[in-house]
Length: 361
Image (cartoon, rainbow, N blue to C red; front, side, top):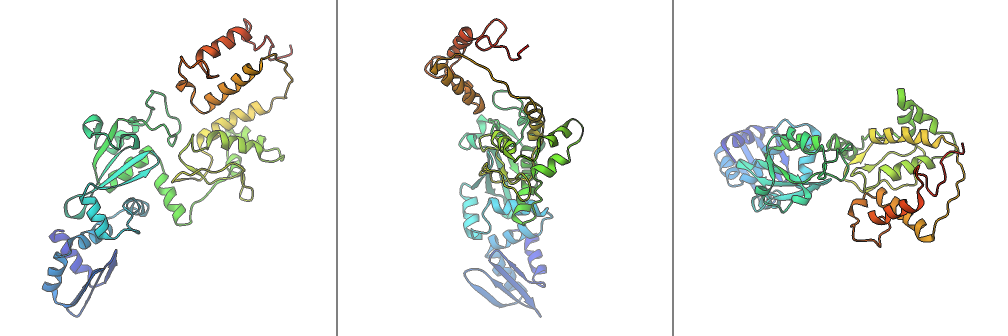
């Protein structure tokens, strides 16, 4: 606590204070200073200042949360991070002073330490680097640096979906204040804090599949034609493909329409997804075109093991596990050498499976 905080407390006593266990009143030169453990009544200003000085955590906590000009979503997010609604001021300050509090947000690991005069100092990194020594990480202080840091995954592949569970490792943001932390999180996971707060307030504006697709124009306007009045199974397929926890850290809140739930679970993410995202829309455009094709009957001759191998290959690719299959593991159907053997045996020179062309012509 410092003199600025103490003077602000004396001034605010005229209006009364009731915040995080601290209660203060002032009437006709008589002050009260009430803590969770003991009330101090009948104080003059000097006595009031003395008691306040003996309770610096309560005073600095009140000042930190009430005297800064923060957007409401940011304030709610920062208080949630340190469990301000569940933990007392003493519990939080002791934890922050002794190693810090920690919380997760998607794949982010957030540490909260106690700074000067009750300020908070935040550190941000990937959860996989939670126990790493900062000297082993690329350290940053500018939240906007995150724009480049999270553009590609650890294998160098571009990340078109910001909330995909492919956040790269090897970096950390240090010495952040609350505003800088909020900016960094917003760069890494855009709008998640705002939508999370709206949901907590009961004000999240959800746009379901039907109205979202009705708004599409240009090359994306074709998606609306996929809704042919014969159910919503196709949207279940889209949600299963794109919105599973393994593919996106958001929790899907949108359904087919306001009256029709999808059969696919929305996931367990901390922050909500209020509408089909741009990746879903782009994929749905392609699927709309593909699903417009008429089915045909093809006949292939495969051994039972070859059929199961094709199924294993599809599963491995769909789950992003193809690269994890070791070259030496020839017992795995998605093994590269087994797959090459299957191609050598069953593909003709034109690349047709079992020599069967795709078109009848």
